[in-house]
Image 1: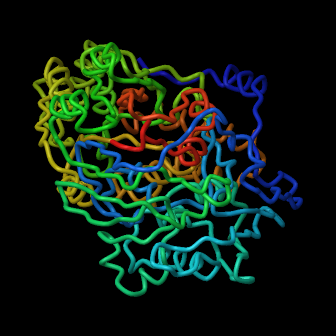
Image 2 (image 1 turned 180 degrees about the vertical axis):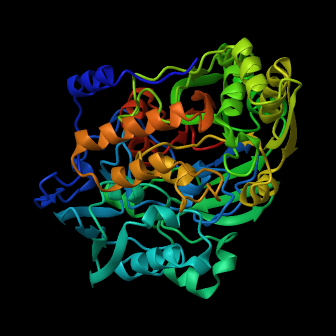
Amino acid sequence: MDHDLDRREFTVGFLTASFALALHPTAAGAATESPSTAVLDQPWAVWDEAAKPMRGGIFRIAAAQYIGKMNPNHWPVLDWVSMGYFHERLMMNDGSYNSTVLWLAEKLNWESPQEVVMTLREGVTFHDGSPFDAKSVKYQIDWIRNPASKTWDAGWLAQLDAVEVVDDRTLRWKFKMPWAGFNGVMANVPGYVMSAKALQDDVDKYDSQPVGTGPYIVEEGSPDNYLKLKRNPNWWFAKASSHPDMPYFDGILVTIVPDPAVRLANLRAGKIDVLLLDKSQYAVAKTDPGLNVHRYPGNHVMALRFNNTKSVFQDIRLRKAVSHAIDRQALIAGTQFGLARLASCMYPEDHWCHNPILKPVTYDPDLSKKLLAEAGYGGGLTVKGYFNNTTMGQTIAEAVKGMLAQVGIDWQVDLMAPAAYATRMQKMDYDLAQGGWIWIYDPDLMPTGLYHPQGGFNFGRSKNDAAIALIEAGRKETDLERRRAIYWQLEEVLYNSYEDAWLWWEETATAYRKQVEGWNQEGFLKYQDAWFWSHPLWFKDGKA
């Protein structure tokens, strides 16, 4: 049972769809300019005038894992929300996962599809007192691109030819070819600005003692124990938004508590203030009168990654056998407690590049057995791999292992900490392992990271020539409709080659103690990043 698309249906579906994105060059290459963005002129810059935010208190968070490295360009990074408290980006994404929000970049002028002039915000300083200016951004970008820096995201800058300093606040970006994904890259990891002075002083030290521009400053970190942040009294956005008390908390304490039951007990006892709920806890938490619980779609995809070049999974029949042996609906019901959406491929259904023609792979264990036999493994197949050693990771791995066993596949899966499985990923020491992607914004980032030879998470395990050609075409196609068509085709190629086994797109639930105020669900869903980072929370009485 294959699942090729009817290309006529694909074409009709594409031509009848419409969409619009801001801040990209035109197909003809004419100069386009984004307006200078005074903060208070932005649609997301709206605050409840009746609210009375209070300064004070330490905001307490419990996390399953320590943040890891705090240089966003070094791996592993395990807590991107905490990362955003001290590092800010040049641009951000809005509620439709488009990079339309100018943040530390104040203005973009697309002089052509291969050249952009960027104006930076003034009055911004790093936590170490050094200036945020054009020289600091250029140093950072050149450092990321230097192979000696061993950054995982350098592949995202492959289109960049050079970045030049025009003056203190102005940069000229030159591309090797048209680069439609530039805004999206600046709204992701390469766009997290870092102090050039700190990088120059001790680049290794930066992994644990970062220096950004954000609302909080790293005070102390103890791996596997806690991360302590203190309020930045000189946060540029507070002044720019006419809210000088921002951020409102005196500090943030992220405590590492691996057991989800203990995390929830601490929340209900008032020992922490917010909790990203374990899926199993949602039903209980939403009925607790002391909590405010919010549920919303996530743009993360959970998947299993195949080693397609140095394992038995070079044979597509075996990749199909694995994928059809997995009952995705049962996994969502049994491990995610219903908080997930069936995935067909990479992009979630609310992402502008999602291909609506593709359907989730069917659960068909009889087909899996047939394919195993055709491939010469009718007597059984043994493969090795790894999965994240968290409570949820263990649950998912055991469930998948059981489903594979039903068709004769023995998955010898090791449960490992991220640092340990990162090494196995790099060495391609696996056949089938945990995969997926978090924060799916510009459509180039995930396929480049996972399927392009220069991608930071490929390491040679995937070499699909058709997919690579489409990835490269999508990077430089500046006509938005043609660009989306390329990513639809890319999803089709990956889907039909069973390049990975995509399982679900996330849904998320977060619980706050009622002492915490300032969350606005409607604003968050509409503006996402822009709302979250521009509307800090506070305690009702200024105390935890």
